Length: 199
Image (cartoon, rainbow, N blue to C red; front, side, top):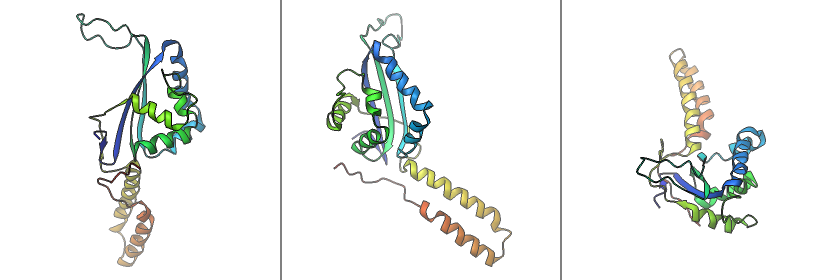
């Protein structure tokens, strides 16, 4: 599975959308960034490193040179890219559960999307339009999004105790260090490869 790098899984999918339906996808995507409840729902998906949608108009594909014939495509296309932790099944399940009709909002106008289907045909559809992501950027391949958030909490607490340590008596330092440990203990984790379960 070339899509897996450390704890991160990369997903790329491209779907054709009838030109007269593209406005619905654009409206839904704009709503994600404007409607606060949807923004809050997305924040719950803390295992997602990022998710990005790009709408490519039928006449928007590049023409590298004058010798290359211009594309004459029947559909616009929605390009979806994401990096996340966990398995592909967990990702699709959680995305569908948190955003409710989010999957239909994004892909519902795409050609052959099972609009009234249960999650199983929807997963089959996404699997068919997804292609291998051989290369993608991962700043911390051995860490999850939660690992990096926890690391910042530990670093901030460590910086705080470091700035105080020089001015404390041994007794004061002992108490300050104990408070530091209590503060960060829930944020200490393990980075590195993880075994993914695909059941």
